[in-house]
Image (cartoon, rainbow, N blue to C red):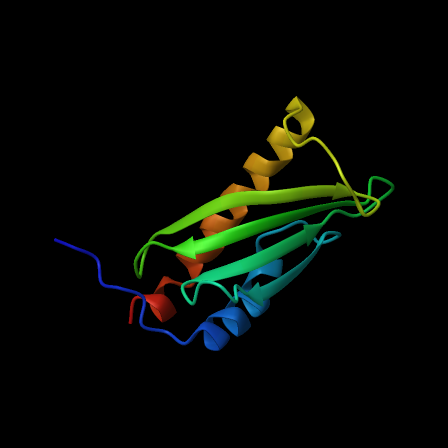
Length: 114
């Protein structure tokens, strides 16, 4: 059985993610959600960490269908300078945030899989 294609307007999706994602990340972290202007089935998400580290993680969240998302890391910045995201600590943070993005997508399934 094939899953249906995403039927929700990208702006509605962005608004839903902006409301829901803060529930899935640490209270001290901040997140911003934007439409991906090149792909109507995708969002851009920036998660900024709290504290002295000042990391910002840029992700692309693309809806494969109405239930499944593909998450990819685009860039990691520290104090507004791009850094190597291949180190073990960065990979751990990326994995954690990727999991949170998938959890947020699951929480929004009643909206995306209507």
